Length: 331
Image (cartoon, rainbow, N blue to C red; front, side, top):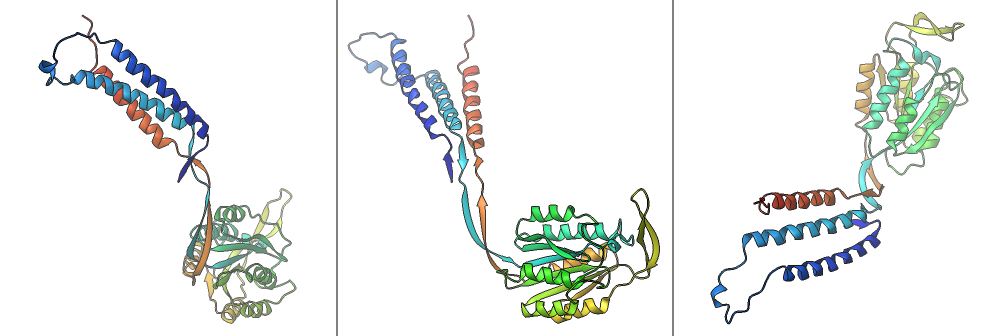
């Protein structure tokens, strides 16, 4: 539904009334008259097609003026709230941002690969409430539960290494994610935990956090990130601020990650490359969904283009008549 931003401009339509009156008056005055006793001889003559075209051209120009006035009133679509039921779920992405995520067994490294895959995942979850939790030696909420995918994607792309003290507090990351998701409206609640190491710090033990998640009906999908064998890990920073790398064994506490997933009814995955990680997120994308009531706000926007096209069509038709049928050739 549309409305006019400046309806007062419609008063300009009254200016067309004197134009119509003037047209009628001048048309009567411009034609000579002849007094005759009877007009029977002229009954079947009718109007000339040139006269009809002349009137049509003038009416088209009058219509152009009317449409232009409507455009000046700025036709707009209404602001409105709409409510709909959609399939959706509550999800928290818990991402490990410890320094080991800079290992180069993924291209360009685990950290950037995880961010890229997470962005693709969020892009495809249009109707979900998704939050973002980061953890290293500590954990915190980067983005609370939201359906604003653009904000979430910008937050993921803006994650920088070194935002948290180095370490891997898997239990604390799960606990923070639980606090974010436990009050969600969706029946299906899931945490996607991505890490490349073993729990070596923090206040909450990983399996204790898993038991709490089970209490709230929250599934945890755990992903161990790292290739098999060895990889180039950052071990120091030189005087220029660049990381120095050394070839070291890849060690992931798969047993704990598997137990976390099994305790909560989730699933454990091992990502040995960016391609495998991407496929894992595609599989998780098939999570159980539930009905959510979503409210959407429609912004006001100018809707004058149909009127502009109508104005162009009327003006073009008037010009076509003037330069073809009504064209005067000098004698």
